[in-house]
Image (tube, rainbow, N blue to C red; front, side, top):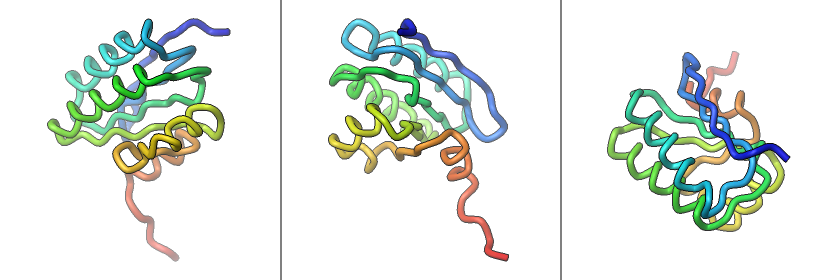
Length: 120
């Protein structure tokens, strides 16, 4: 099992934070600090890729909602990539898609930032 880690990447469309390992009471503060630092450094959307996450609890959800509040005040959208496994199930049960859009893949999340595409 991979240790908890957050990597940050600048993409043309957004800042992408990939999260690995477990997010629980012991690591949620580190997640929130890393995402808050990313928000402070940019003015583009923030995409948080949770698809590699193996576990998350209420502390993780609290951290994600705190980041979403900060981003909302800055006018920066936050999108989550959940894959189709554990993170999607937990966040879906909490109905967080109303506050934090959930996407199955990173390309899907990045594509949603471009808005609707014309039909040819």
